[in-house]
Image 1 (tube, rainbow, N blue to C red):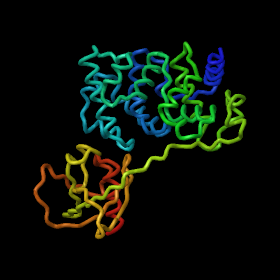
Image 2: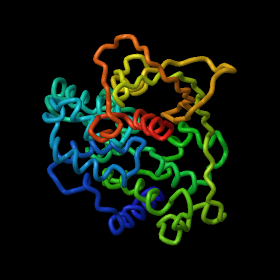
Image 3: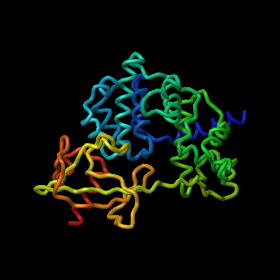
Image 4: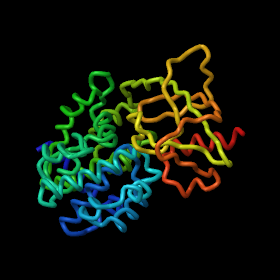
Length: 327
């Protein structure tokens, strides 16, 4: 009964306050499932406000699974450019191909089948199961974690582990409106239980929220340390153009154009020119100019004055901009 009261309070709030998002449009079930798949891939590690224009353009040009499965790789990456984490775009296309080949062109509703698809882990499988198929899953994203931590006043390190949060989320119970309920919990975290200055006076749960009653809204996180890595990056320039090569060496930005570079052990002679954070890496980069370069397969000479015309990861663009500003 208590679970039902919590769910009803949150859903009543959601019905009045939910945002109009392009993937929430009233469309056929088939389109809703496709919209959910695309939006959840885009929303991995990216905020809603950033995703909205990308999603609208993506759906306009790639309206269904069949189009996606056969879409040109370069054009696909161009539509994704600026969202980062480009492996998501490649995995999304692979997922579309698997669905067409192995699931009769229908996105599977089974959690384990969803998890078997490229780029889909526990969270994304839970989100798609709940939102697209109205199944009783509560996907634990950052927004829902925040609501849970504050509502139950979870502060200690063992309390805020993923494993424990998955156990504690049972406090939210379930609803016959599983699709709306998952989105309502996310929305509550995004609009009300914000990281800083939560709007407790508008929250449907504030009367029972321990953090509200204690007036302590500080959120503790498990400290993650980025790995320090060191790279020597070679710059070859000819006719005011920079040489890029296709990355087949590193796991990050696989098959994208980057500057020739290799990882080195930190030494006393390592002079860092710039630092770039990429995923869980703290990349310390030393730049060397060179006039002699070995032949490379499919060299790509780019003109820094026309950077917007190339399909390049932000990582490479940052280096180009650094070089242009440090001539």
